[in-house]
Length: 92
Image: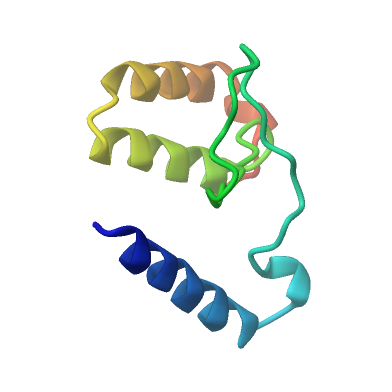
């Protein structure tokens, strides 16, 4: 996908999110993302952070993403985490 199309897509997503709901539920710059090894991140990238230790829906979303991207090692790690911490996340 071209860089222009990516920018357009991100703009459309931000526009849609700005029209609905609570501003705290919208895409905004809440976190600073860095890599553990110190290598630079793409300064133009849009990152979405999920906290999986206390939100079952976030954990499920991360597991679904891992499967769709064929990252089965990550999926297995998340599944094991889910099993080990069943009582610590939000109830369904």
